[in-house]
Length: 201
Image (cartoon, rainbow, N blue to C red; front, side, top):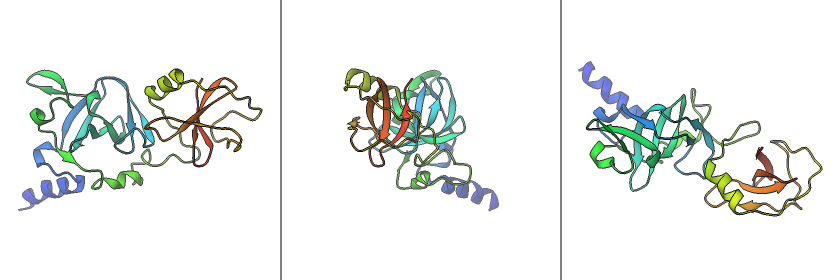
């Protein structure tokens, strides 16, 4: 009886809706990818998983392209097109072969505890003072292709600085932070607190 109960309890702890055989699916990153604390680029970034990193895939959201994974010591969400798995001896994209690979379905509600760090999950959660974010490459691409006029700034241009209300920031589509160009340098800003969260080189 104990031999039957142990794997069942382990699967329940993971919050998966799939069978026990799917609990340890392995996926590999196809490129350097950003790991987010929720299923979308608007959530805080946990960090970067470098190309070729292997991780344990929990599953993906139903009808969406976001999957939850444990990779390089980080637990969070990545885009399914950036994950590869072995299928009949060949690497295939998870997004295009979810049914073939029998990828489990998970829901963000069931894994909502990700937003509140638990012991061992310190990297996952909201970006607070002193935390480091890793903006995805597409944010820089948007900034470069949608330029705004540079604003002269006499204060310290460092993470944690709070910008005065007179400086207008521009929204980045589908991303949590806004941006502004100060002294000809792109800067990411939390639009709620006006706090500088990232300064591009």
